[in-house]
Length: 144
Ligand code: HEC
Image (tube, rainbow, N blue to C red; front, side):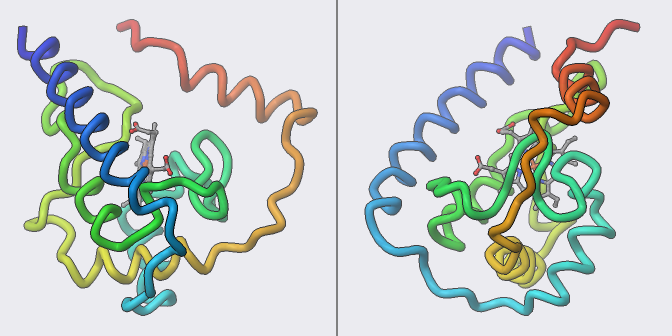
């Protein structure tokens, strides 16, 4: 039941974020206030690279995707704070929740600055077989 409620609230949240973000996406990305090199540090310490790669591409690319989530620091912060799977019953590979008591607003600003500074020249990965197998394995549901 809790898992279903989590799923429902996650869907509602993502719909809300998507429509808020769609409004913002029409505009230029907002200013960057944080410190990108401190953000790089946080990116590694908090293990973001484990799912998003060392340079922000792989399973779910981060920068330069035109994503509305990154159109503004405010939307990005809401996304980081608003994840529904706070304590999933089973291990998941979903994006975790990062509440203010584990990742401060300043750290979120720094992360945002770092993600916005990521390079645009992402290499083609479609024909790297081993990499594609890793991505597919990550999509499989957890089976104990
Ligand atoms: C356990 C894997 C995992 C970890 C760790 C993780 N993420 Fe994610 N992240 C995901 C997945 C999967 C998505 C896809 C969308 C979703 O689940 O909402 C995502 C989506 C995102 C997005 C939205 C991308 C877009 O534009 O659609 C951002 C931004 C993001 N993550 C940033 C981070 C940052 C910053 C950290 C570290 C503090 C982090 N993630 C840690 C798995 C992860």
